[in-house]
Length: 554
Image 1 (cartoon, helix red, strand yellow):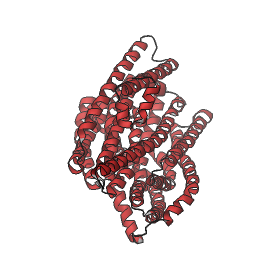
Image 2: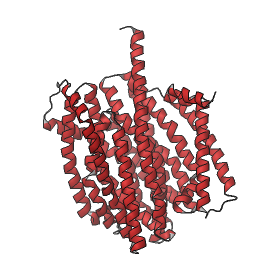
Image 3: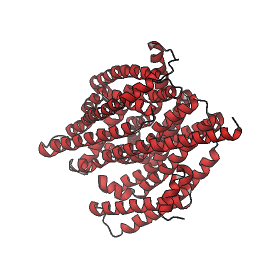
Image 4: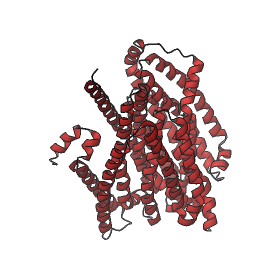
């Protein structure tokens, strides 16, 4: 084969990988974004039904504490196996070992069923102890944890089925099931909370417990949708399995070891953000009480501002990175398995550039519209607005960690990825008290930002030196994205500043109208700018040229 034909083949493979990445990311992003938006919108009536602003903050704080512990158990119960299954199935598919991948999937299902039952039992019966160890002794968390434990019976199995589809680069089943799961969950949350608070005049603790039990209801619907997709795909999957090489001979014991050796890194790295949040949950009240003498209710209210209120909103944009990470892992694993180093390097660049193209304007856009957005969801609170703005910037670092750790896992650099995460977590622990002492409620977020920055820099260095990733192009394009996003940020902030000279901060209806106007202007402006300077087509490919010409942007 001539050098030109080799170059042409490599170029075609890179182009196909970019197309797969963009298509898969589009599905996962859509599913993730719609799910996150639904998961945030319900907060508006949910908070109103608790009556006073203080009661709403206490409910938010309790919800956040319970969900942080549940999230950790969820990661443990799934044991990182969905990600590992996705990665390994992509590997076996790349070498035409479809039957081997199916055996791996069946073994994974058995493991998921067992871990789901065990973790659900531990969380239900150990709730009083967990409340002491992970929630500062708040016994109100106990019924919340018990309500959440039921979901652990189903979600592990649902997650591994999603991982199976993702290994075949089929992102639609995961995205659609995720959306349906969230719809069912939100409907139950709103119905149960209204019944408890408005019909029965019950306790906010009971309402929060019912709201968290909704995770179980949503999981039932999500698994049902995946089952329908699986049955539809069964003939095709069987045909691929029959055409498999069947040259890999692994015993059940070897399968078990392969699954767990790949899953363990996913457990640690997937729990990265959650571990940072649980550390905040365990230390915030104590550390703040040494700086300021405040009541327990006041401390819980301040904790809710950054752990629930702002976190609920910034996780909408962080979910963009999760969608990219899920898509990138099987693609990188397939390229790595074929030893296609040019494609590996190109795939890293594609993933990071696509990430920054979406994440930076999303985060800065949320910063710009923080005031009307916060008023819509939680009513006016100046400190809460400032925290949301600050957290919007920290969200870029949280999301970058998610994408970089996924890239390293796709490249089988699990040990170093864990090492770098632990270094960053250690930095977070060291910085926590000084940051709280100096910056009060902003302190935990700043400490998180510093820790995530250290981890991300170490991961970048590994990609550069071990895989020859050429960072200059990605750096130049990221600087361009940041510059254009900053222009959008300044203009939207100016509109916001001017509008609130005429709009009362207590008027939620007008704030909603302003929010819609600001979002439309921000999206249109950023979209125009990235098309005008040809940045979008450089990252997304030639199809964007057609869009630019249709919009008559020269």
